[in-house]
Amino acid sequence: MLQRSKLKPCKNCQKPVTRQEKICPYCGQKLKNGYYPKLIIGFMLLILLSTLAIPTKSNLEKERQKIATAVADQLDPHELANIFNNRNEHTQSELLNKEKEITGKIIEWQLKVFVVTKTPDNYRIVTHPTIETPGTLLTVYPQSDEEPKYLEGLKAGHKIKIKGKIAGTLQGRIKIDPAFLI
Image (cartoon, rainbow, N blue to C red; front, top):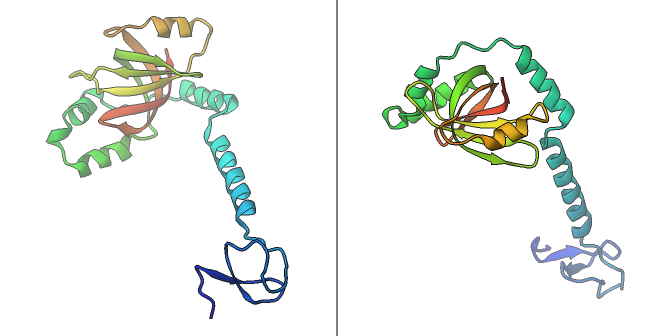
């Protein structure tokens, strides 16, 4: 019986050969280990999956239109601030349930900027948690040529009004992606 990890049968003569052999020592047949096709297929799948994961401009525009025309859900930012800004006072189960409840909701809030960073196609804004509003992590997509200048000029303490879709939470902050200035 062939040991699975060390030996395999030659496809030509069916005699056992080690997996490291390139040529069968019995019949001289060239052996294929099958690593390269698997590697190439795996690499192609990885490229395909990463391509599908990147939002396209048309998908982003459709999402923006949906958000722009949607009526904002009536989420109480003060209640969410109480829950997410004071995570130690709530159980992990309570936090997870609240996250599930609010994910996918459309919000329209005024928030206080903490820091702004630029990526190639959007801006990430971390906001200050206050008694009135929870801390958020916004992914803001500029809608005009003037907005990047405005976003780059934002400083800590500035207030912005945004409309966006809640995408979950990250480290106690509510992720809003995509978000748009209004």
